[in-house]
Amino acid sequence: MSKKKILIFDDDTTLLELISIIFEDGGYEVDISQTSHNILEKVSEFHPDIILMDNWIPNIGGIEATRLLKSQEEFKHIPVIYVTANNDIEALAESAQANDFVAKPFDLEDLEQKVAKYLKN
Image 1 (cartoon, one colour):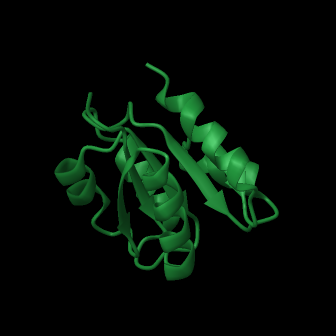
Image 2: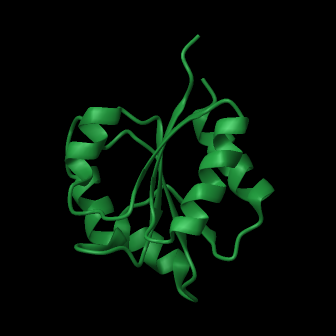
């Protein structure tokens, strides 16, 4: 059985390392990006099963990147969990057309449960 793939967009390297280790230990294959301008390229190369998207990410930002992804017929089925430290995260996630959201600082168990929920076969 192939591993489920998680693609994480965040400009915080410490956070990227931490989340990568946790999900890799959980049996997932993880790829990361610190910018979002090449989201379509990253997604078509890696074929993720789910995406974790930060709001404050260089170049085009999380909302723009998520909308771009969701506007593509071949990628719009991929769940996107919006992960950010904004007060208005629910509105931002909705505006971005994300499937769900987790507020930073987040509870790792909460994040893992949300990812698992979207990756059930």
